[in-house]
Structure formats: structure tokens, C-alpha cells
Length: 109
Image (cartoon, rainbow, N blue to C red; front, side, top):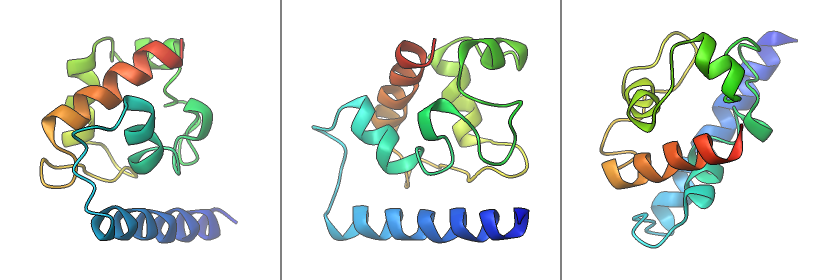
């Protein structure tokens, strides 16, 4: 079952990245919510975490994992641990990453 979820998540990520490239999405006019939905929501639905339930995006888990600021979230996006896709600046620009991080902090209290 877990391997099926991993395969599903991987397939969904490929689809999302493919669609964003086809649409020419540059993130300049997208909201943090739109960026989150495009890049993060497949693995973090409603701020959860389909791979590791102890590493959700909710404040209590972020605090427990010493992630307290937008900069901390961006650092995790750029250099994630096992099980998370790495979002380099070619995939998610610095401005997009900042929008996503601020959205996470505002939304998943």
C-alpha cells in the first residue's frame, strides 16, 4: 500500500511539473496558494504529509522540526530530507518559494 502511495505521488508530481511547463507558468502573478497547489499540495494535502505524518505543515509539527520562519521553509524546500522532492531555483524560483512559505505559515496555524 505504501509503495502504491509513493508511485501515485511520483506520478502526480510528474503531471504537475509537466502542466506548469506547458502553461509557461513563471509564478510572477500567482498567489502563494496557487504556487502551493501547483508544487506542494499533492504531498501536503490540507497541510498534511502523505509520506511522514510527523512532518506536516501545521505549526505544531513545524515547531517540533525547528521550522519557524519562511526562510526555514525555503531551506527545507531547497535541501529536503528523505522522501521529499528537492525544489531547486529552476523548479521553484526564490519569489515563488517565498510566496509558498508565507502561505504555509499563514494558512496551517
